[in-house]
Amino acid sequence: MTPELLPKGVTDRALLKSLNTQQLKAMAKERDIEGFSKPEKADLVNLLAAA
Image (tube, rainbow, N blue to C red; front, side):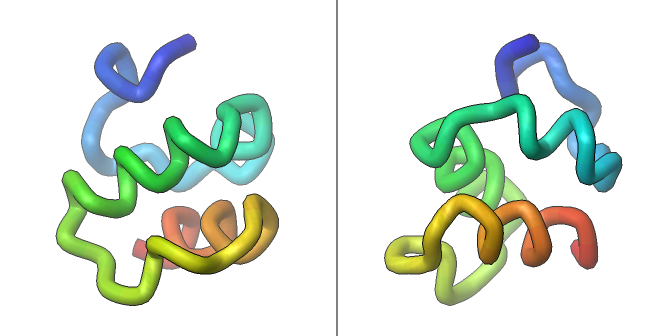
């Protein structure tokens, strides 16, 4: 599933983990989450799951 097809409020860790780092960064940017450009995949999953 691509980020474009996901609802904006998705916080399911398993679903987020299935995405690649580039997709996670795009989602973080879309959600106006700061500090997303440098974190690794696990950190991005945590940021998005908490948002």
